[in-house]
Image (cartoon, rainbow, N blue to C red):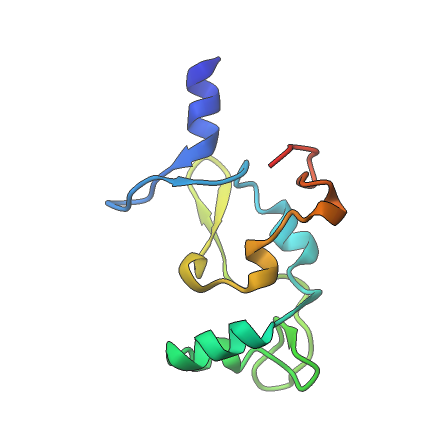
Amino acid sequence: MFEILKQLFSISSNDEKPQTCCLCCGDCCEAFGGHLHASENDKERWRREGREDLLARINRLDWIWVDPETKQPLERCPFITSIPENRKICAIQDTKPDICRDYPTLAHEKRCLHGFFM
């Protein structure tokens, strides 16, 4: 049982060090990914990092993730990456939006969509 739990919370891809995360199912990102706002901190960080690809995915009302050409909201985050064992991780983990970093919030009782307490 301990080994199963250990595998759920520690994943690695290639030579990267293991990262601790939730169940890594991607359900939260898929459910909420198209209904988020960029913070001023996000926009400043992305400017500093030269992340024009991320800045192009913000509309005039600071909604993310939007189509860079039409500025229409996408239904899900475009940065969800599938990994082995039917898991998903964030392709922009190091610079993901503050709202994603803070999830799940107290408003969610610090629980993911599956009820897992984070």
